[in-house]
Length: 435
Image 1 (cartoon, rainbow, N blue to C red):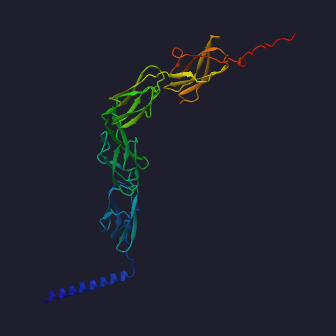
Image 2: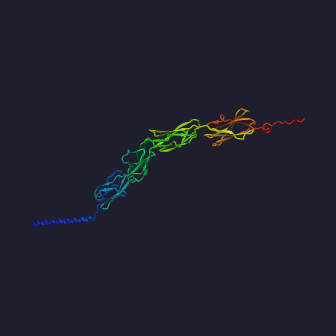
Image 3: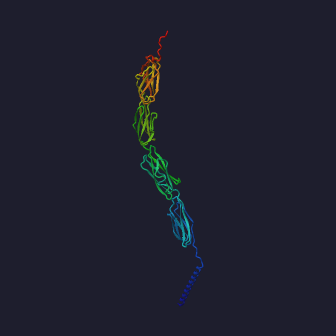
C-alpha cells in the first residue's frame, strides 16, 4: 500500500512540474511573437433597381463584426443581421422607390478589433408613374344641361399637366409638380358647358406626366338636347312706308333666322336661348300688297321650325288736294299757282303743264323737290303772252308714281294787257303828217 501511494504522489508532482514548465514557455513565447491580424472584406457598392426591396451582400471575416447604417433621407432602409462572427451575409430591406429621384445610404462594417470597411447602397429612381384610379379606360357622361361636375383620380410620381380636347370641357386642375419626391393621388373635377343642340358630342381629357413621357386620357360624352322652340306673335300687319316689329323667340338651344332681306331686316340672324328680335320692315314702293316670312329653326337631327308672316300694305300715289291761281298774281306776262297735296313718300319733282289758244302744244315747267317734308308747292309761269287765254294743270311725282289734275282740275285764265303801253307791240304812231 505504501508503495502505490508513493508512486501516485510522484506522478502528481511530475504532472504539476510539466504544467508549470509549459506555462512558462507560452508566456515567454507571447513576448516575442506579434498578435494575429483581423480579416474583413466587403464590396464597395450595392446597387438596387427601383423595384427591388431586398438584396444581400457577403462579409468575409475571421472575427466578430458589427454593422451600422447612415440612412440620410432613406428612412425605409433596414439591415439584418446587424452583427455576426466570421464569414456572413447581410440583407438590405427597403420599399420600392416610386420617386423620380435616386437614393443612397452608407453601410459601415467594424470588427471587434477596430478594422472598418464601408459600402454605398444605391437604389435607382422609379420610372414615370401615371395611373388612373379605376383603370385606363374611363368615360364620364353628362346630361345636356348638367347640374353637377364629375371627378376622376390619378396617381403620379412626377410633374403633370391636364388639357382638354375642346373648350366646352373644363377641369379644376391644370398642372402640378408636387409629386416629384413621392407618388400622390389627385382628384380632379370635370365640368362641361350646357349643350345647345340636339346632337350629342364627345371630347377628351388628357393627363400627361413629365412633359409627355407617359399619357392617359378620359373620354367625355354629353347627350344632345330635346329642342323646345316657340315664337310670338306669328303674324304682323305692316304699313307701306315700313316700320319696326319685335319677335319674341323662346328656345332652349341655338337657333337661326331665315328671311328675304330685300323686304325686311333683322338685327340678328342667330342666337341662343330666349331673345327679342327687332325686325325692320322696309318701305313698300309698289302699288301691290306684299307678304314675306321669317323662319326660325333650331336643332340639327330633329329640326324644329316656326314661321312669322308679315303682310305689308300697298303703297299709294300722292294725291293733289288743291290746285289754283294765286289771287291777283296774273299779269300780262306771268301767273302764279299753288299745289296742295298729300303723299306717303316724299315728292321728287313737281310742276305744271300749260298751253294757250294761240299755241295748243303743251309745255312743261317742272322743278326738283329739295324739301322732303313739303306739303305745298308754288309755281310761277313767266314769259306769257298778253291778252292770251291759257290752260294749266298740275303734276307731282314720287317713287310710287306721278299724278296730275289733267282730268279733274284744269285752270284757265287770260293774261292782261288792256293798255297800249302795256302791250308787247307798241301802238303805231297815228300823228298826221305835215303837208
